[in-house]
Image 1 (cartoon, one colour):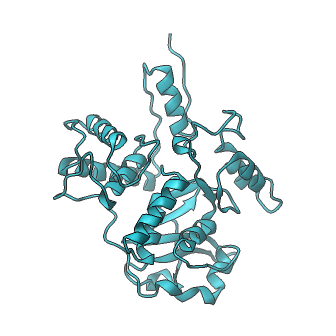
Image 2 (cartoon, one colour):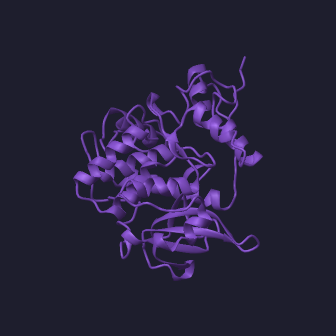
Amino acid sequence: MNSSKQVDTLIKQWRAQGKTKAEIIVLQAEAMLGWPYAWGASGQDCTPDKRRYFMNRGTIGPGDAELIRKRCRVLNGSSASCPGCKYYPGGAKTRIQDCQGFEKEIHKAVGITLKGGGATSMYKDDSNWAEKGPIANMPDDAVCLVFKHIASTGKMDHVGQHVGGGNIIHCSGEVKRGKITDKGWTHYAIPKALSGAKAPASQEVKPVTQILKKGSRGDAVLRLQQRLQELGYDLSPCGADGQFGKKTEAAVKAFQHDRGLAADGIAGPLTFAELNKSTELNKTAESANLFYTVTIPHVAEARAEELLLMYAGATKTREG
């Protein structure tokens, strides 16, 4: 997972490279994968005090308040400080947001202000949009927001970011990937500044003619790193920064070893094929609501503690 400082640095790099507003929005959404959720937040630093503030707001429901509490190691009592928390990668902060706060943050980075205090008021404010309407009318590969309308209440219940190819990145529990078919998205809206903008090329990591290794740089490396992080491989303290260094090499080797490949730390066609296969397997399991309990025997105490931090709800049992 990237820290907020790393994402800010990446945004500066993308601007210097001349990337468009649409490209930066998509890349930034990708770079923020895994960042934490707090109802009512819109890009504040993720700290126990800030979490406590949002948890204790009078307008928040008990379920959202509990979600904020249980995902903070300090507030839930599992640790006295932030270091070691997955939302504190490499000892650096991330930022918290809810679904509409996430959208405001990634658009603000390219100079677009989205008005509205929530998903409903955001959608209804026509000054935000070049066009909007039912999801069936959404232009192909538009860089736009998608909304979920609840007919019984007349309100928009959720908002996410379409990044191309029917792929959505949204903040629900944390910043995560999804499909346009996943959550019953009903409407779309294209910001005025993005009218006619098309999503960048496919986000899949399939550069079959490209070899990535230590010393490589660029967007292909960034996407490789993001896939590795999604699959649970540690890249701290650098995170997904677009630079193939020692930690990325070690993560690639670990992935290759786990998939029965030659663990040389070089990402070529076979490694990318396995990365995408693993991603599709994860998506299939999620969409089918399949869940598993995994037991890993004979793990050293230090490694067990690392795994507990990586996987919410995990427990350990002492052997012998």
